Amino acid sequence: MRVPPLPGDQWSDQERAALAVLLPEHRLNPRGAGNALATLVRHPRLVRRFLPFSGYMMMRSTLPARLRELAVLRVARLRGCAYEWTEHVKLAALAGLSEEEIEAAGRGEAADEPDATVLRAVGELERDHNVSDGTWAALGEHLDERQLIDLVFTVGTYGMLATAFNTFGVEPDEPGEPSEFERPGAGG
Image (cartoon, rainbow, N blue to C red; front, side):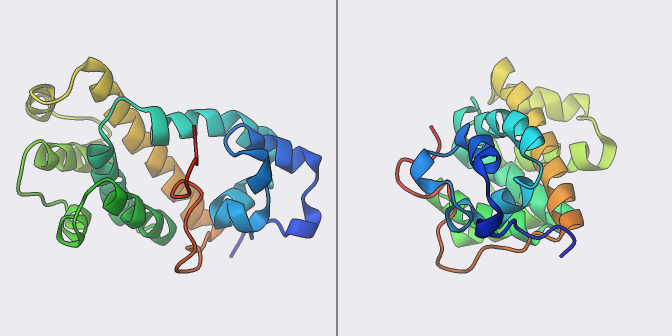
């Protein structure tokens, strides 16, 4: 682990304020934040600016939750990010994906549209940093313009996070401990 989670006895008002943009005050502690946020909070100025955007991508995006989670799962597998995969398997299940669909998404496979097209777009974005005209047109049959934009930003955001988590050595949270976004009233 290159950048470990910040221990609770080292949290100051600055770290708590940085996370307050996303999390209610009563959960501003290392255990409630999980390994990712407790690691990122080591740079409070950055995290205070990044979390509103990240929170939008996770909870307020126009992209349907199912498609968002398919995209994130594929990014996590392509980037080899254990933290992102572990957390988003739980979120994908909450979004209605079955275990089989989750595992297939990791391989870039889906039986139905628009799932298959979204996974193809993720593969193209990760490989080519662009989406082909054919895939864009196929996406347009299922998504409106804002959803298309949100899809591209979802892939980019979670690709960046996977890179950061892998580089810092962020480990998955303990099994059975719900992520901050699975808790009732989480997010906004």
